[in-house]
Length: 132
Image 1 (cartoon, rainbow, N blue to C red):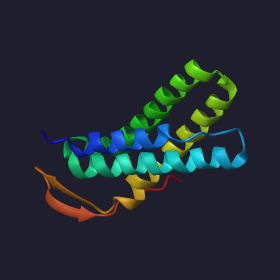
Image 2: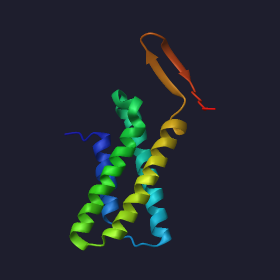
Image 3: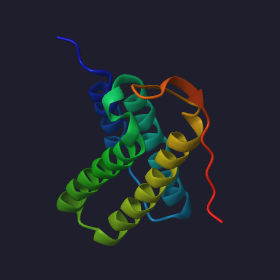
Image 4: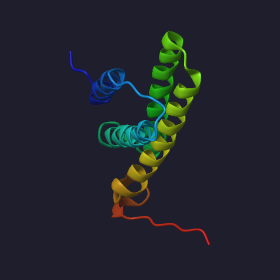
């Protein structure tokens, strides 16, 4: 039985996250911010590589799965140990990092995008957009 790469990545990430204890220090919150960015960026890249049917929404998938994972983990931590305030800080920083990591990975690291359009054929390019 072969485990799909996304499931393997998520199981590995949740195992690593479950072994980490945090406190309310600035270093702890920054580590949650960075961890969220790395986790969401990784999920976004895995979705882009192995799940092309979700490629258009890869950033949202990375953000959503990373955020859902930390919310589930911290909910269990609150149920077992209490300390709602500390866990909410962890969730807030992780979700912020997830948004940043998914956005940067989607918009900048995974570009240029090669697409096969039925109406326009195959093309490669970088799309830059700025609203004035």
